[in-house]
Length: 65
Ligand code: SF4
Image 1: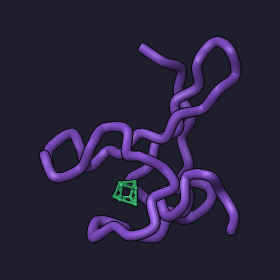
Image 2 (image 1 turned 120 degrees about the horizontal axis):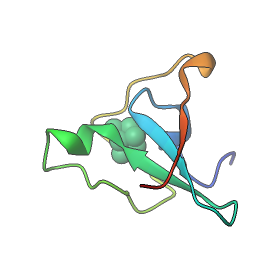
Image 3 (image 1 turned 30 degrees about the vertical axis):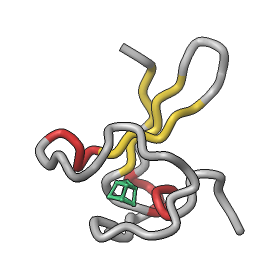
Image 4 (image 1 turned 90 degrees about the vertical axis):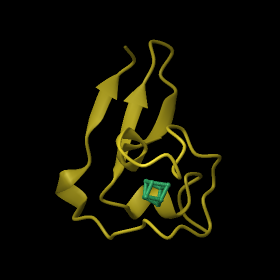
């Protein structure tokens, strides 16, 4: 198996959040307007109805807010 984030690692709705210690957290952007999706899903996600494949270049990484 690849990423510790599971399905989210290849999903168009994932945003990686980096903290100051270098850890990364997987945020689900679907959570912004759909309560069925947790903001920080428990990983690895193995099954998700909201999964949509992402082009590799679309991955975003942001710092924590
Ligand atoms: S929609 Fe599902 S697979 Fe995609 S980022 Fe959210 S929880 Fe992960």
